[in-house]
Length: 206
Image (cartoon, rainbow, N blue to C red):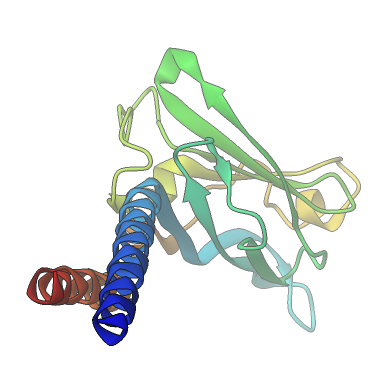
């Protein structure tokens, strides 16, 4: 009798533990899915600006500046996800760009992103080109955006390399601007199958 009581109590404890584990795992799966649906990967690759013919050994070659920028955008809090910003710049401007901020642009129904260097030069990204009606109201929907229309290089002063090399208000001549979702299907699948397996096992032992 005592043995039966002990076994029964152990079974109850085990069932309660399995219930708690199932609830926790279900919550984890749900939270992960919600988070995955609200995080988007933003990539601006090989964004190439071509300035005037003032570069090269004798100053008669076309000047160029290339940027590669990427980050995760959290659509829930409307901000860049901490620790995900990456900016690599190379070319005639000669200064690294640092991310400044993102603001809404209500009239155009878009977002405005800004990067600056120490000279005050700025890379501006507007996800809606009002005149051309490009990408308006779409960000951060996954897809390809217009790098040529949406991105612009603005020089900080008339005396810095950005201006003297002819980059003032230049739009890229090449590059891609894409937004993609960032769920992890394999991880979600494993969590989901684990949860289902636990439910099945719970029913069998219950």
